[in-house]
Image (tube, rainbow, N blue to C red; front, side):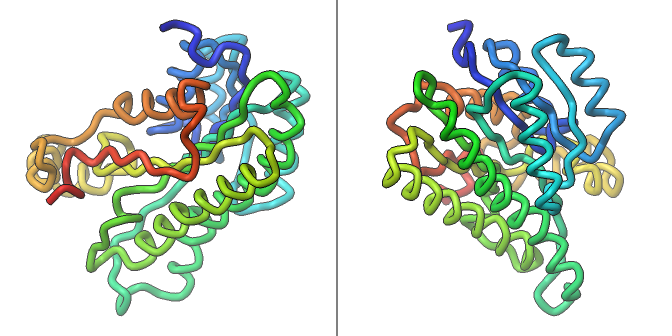
Length: 256
């Protein structure tokens, strides 16, 4: 099924590493042209160079509205359109409601929720200009923590749950306006990416896999490509009747 997103242009936040990096690689493999947007400039430029002419890098701090305007303008200037937005940038913080400071609470929400809001707001405005022949899609990376709470995940739970319902609101708005833009959220559990480096440093690689894997019914961490292929599906017209939905990729955690 090569060419699943042929002709489409995608902008991926957090695209220099982790799930965003994997999504960029797979979308390019399936025929898309991709703009990698991140604050990690060295990694982002290296990835774009490795992916070749179908990829381009822009610096983007997702918490700054003007930076979003510039990143979207740069995408259209480079590739002539925008059809797909993948909001993958995010940070984690393991603190209880008593331990977390207001500054920390606001920082998590600024990146994990406000950044997605800004992407959706400005993404919809641009994508709707380019959907006469190719459908548009917004893919928001939430988390299983946006559905199931943890005692020490106060801000992360709140922000990722917000992404889930924001995605539904955006989906309904676009459907009502007949924009030909779909919006869905993706909810992974522990995936072996740099997001887990704090556990890797604390327990070692083997210890991290064993400790976190015990919490997953399938008995292991997820692989980035297991999320990346779901992103490709949502970006493609294969999912043309899917909007306002969640894709839960949690190894069975939510079934317990």
